[in-house]
Length: 166
Image (cartoon, rainbow, N blue to C red):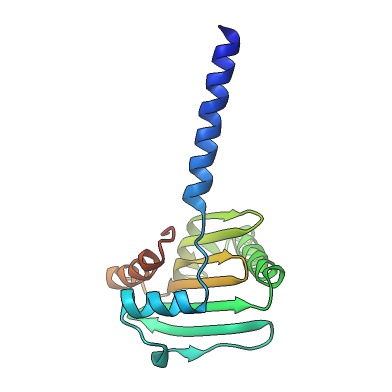
């Protein structure tokens, strides 16, 4: 009986762990996937975006969707993207430690993907949105406007990519 309970408990804990990690998974989008989603789901064409390529960034795009700011970066390697994401997390932790951020947040950072979502104020400025990392790419979506329409714009972009909302 005890062995059976242990087995059932192990199976249930494993199932719970699997459900948590699958919910937190950040989908990977290469440049073509990103552009297709922007065009098909958000009605934003590549011509409407700024080119943000540069040092360590193979491909980069930036555009505004209503009051939402959206950026896509495909780095020269997974290692570079992970390092950039971890710097974002470190900066955020510093803001929290210094009491510069007031609000709610959640993050995941595992070996191949992660996200940071925030809903609050940074130095009395609204920050609503998130950073999403997988392999060699990071997608950033946020607004600094404090109104329902701006939050709706952010949610629409995040929904188009299937990511976690703040």
